[in-house]
Structures are given as C-alpha cells and as structure tokens.
Amino acid sequence: MNILIFGPNGSGKGTQGAIVQKKFGVPHIETGVIFRQNIKGGTELGMKAKAFIDKGELVPDEITVPMILSRLQEDDCKKGWLLDGFPRNLAQAEALWKALQAAGMKLDFVIEILLDRKIAKQRIMGRRLCANDNNHPNNIFIDAIKPAEKDGKPVCRVCGCETLTARADDQDEDAIDKRHGIYYDTKTGSLAAVNYFKERVKVIEVDGTAGVKEVSEDLLKKLS
Image (cartoon, rainbow, N blue to C red; front, side, top):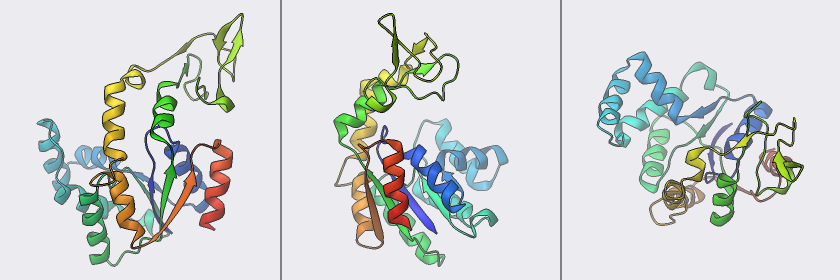
C-alpha cells in the first residue's frame, strides 16, 4: 500500500503517520531524512542538494523528486510506503505524479487531515514540554491533553513535573503563519496539491479536530 499523507503543522500528521506505519508495516518516509541521508552518504544527488542548501536556496524538484523516487524503490518499500512532507505544492505534486507513472509505481491513497487554520495555529502555540520527558503530551489548547494543575500552576499531566516550557519556534507566529500560508494555499500550495491528487487517486479525509484515538480509528477504518 503506497500512501501520501497531508496535514498542516499542528494537525497530528506525524502521530497518525506512525500509527499507519505500525498498522500496515510500511516505512514512514520523511523527506527531511532523505535529504540528510543522501548528504551524509555523499551521493551525487545529495551533493547537488547540499550545494543549494549551503546557499540557503530551495533544492530544485529535478533533484528532490529523483532522490525521493530512489528511496521509494529500496527493499523495505516493496510492500508499500507512507511518504510524509512531499509534495508541498502543486508543481511538486505534478512532478511526483509524473515520476511515479514513469517508474510504474502506483499511488493507492492520499490521506488528508482536515484542520481549521486557526485551530492548527493554536495547537502549535499551545504545546508545552515536560522537563522530565518531552514526549509527555501537554497542550493548553487541547482539552484531552491539557496540563494538570497544582497550587494554581500548570504541571505535566503525565508525571506531575512542575517545569513546563514552550519551544521558541512554537511561539514564532510569523514562522507559523508562513508555513501555514503555503499549506492552506489552494492555488499553488499544499492544498492545491491535494486537489490535484483528488482527480487521480482516492483521497481519504479525516477530521483532525477529534482526539488522537478518534482520528486514528476513523483513518484506519477508511484505509481498510
């Protein structure tokens, strides 16, 4: 089963991707990891990509797409894959689709996690990190994982740690708005890419406002 997954920052896309990976036994492939592996391994494509990255420029699709395609053709992907983080816009969607078609690779499903832009931003800015374990889920804007209280102060809902902090980048509204501006763009951005695939494969939509369990149950039901 070959799958693309879309969702704005704050939608829980990474969490749901991990659940799908475990359920179907396919690798969860993130484009950032592909870049790092190619650069570290000194591949031809990796070195070409590094030249652009070192100059602070975006890596062209003619480098990115072959790099991704090569990863999708590795042995661990024979039973399928879940691609996360690409394509980010309409042009990349068109390039990836053409590459998959040329390679004779089928795309079975596209997952789209639906979430209002305002809620997505709140979720990002509401994240709180536990000093004992950053994996303890705490978010001041999500009732299901809202921090507990002790003496009128927020504490980790899992272990009771009294030190909860926010990541600096989670509080950078300009950066969040810029990322979301690309994602929610229906003309050339990520949502334009989703709409492109809707004309070609089955797109599974799930409501991202629900809890993690509810979202995953709905998603797995629609994938089965």
